[in-house]
Length: 304
Image (cartoon, rainbow, N blue to C red; front, side, top):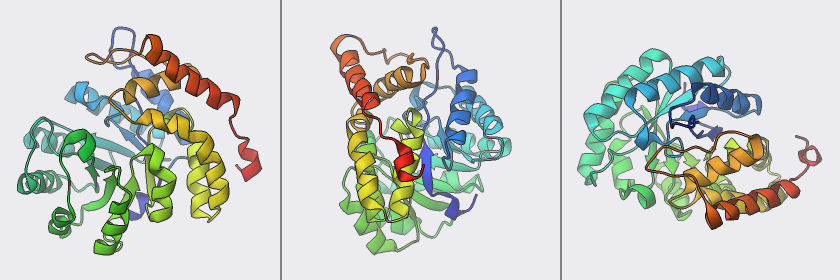
């Protein structure tokens, strides 16, 4: 995978679970095929939405293997590295390369709020053990660590750092990063309900969440923006926004798995300590999804 491949729509898929909270590898396979056939550009596995924090190393590697097989060479599989220690992250990254993963999305080490020097050292240690291109995942809202422009400048001499998943929630960061680095890093928006704004400002890809239920709409928005058809993209995006808001907040995994279940009939089971939504929380999601389905746009109108 070259830097130019970190473009387009990159679904961060959920990890389907059986009723007893075991990974449903058949569900993983079906999800990758569903996304592949909808025209996405890559698939990210074992991310935050994929419940990385509750998956074992062995599960992550098997999910990646199944995803690679299901992709059948048509889209690259990107594995998320979100481990508690640098050693664990580096070990997983090294093995990922041997099984055919084509890219890594790397977070700072979990649990410990590292300082800038420690974060840069963590990223360099992972880059040192693998030839794979790396997306630097910056999400200070969720993980408490802000990867600053100064840190990105320090990391710029490592060619494996090719892209940034921009999840700060501040679209000013897009212009600031482009002003500071030009095209040194590809910027990928990671906040669903800021996606269109971020694409217009210069992000070249969308690591998306609600795409797991609505891939064709996500791809249509992205492509319309690339074609300069902003007003048409806005029509779909404004319909999509109430659904995209489900990607925000501490229960985003439960929200999105329930949305998938309503739209696609997939399993809403999550792994503890998460619990499935009940009562008013579940009803709120159902209401948003059912309203969205009722008014779902006709993509043929836009040539899709």
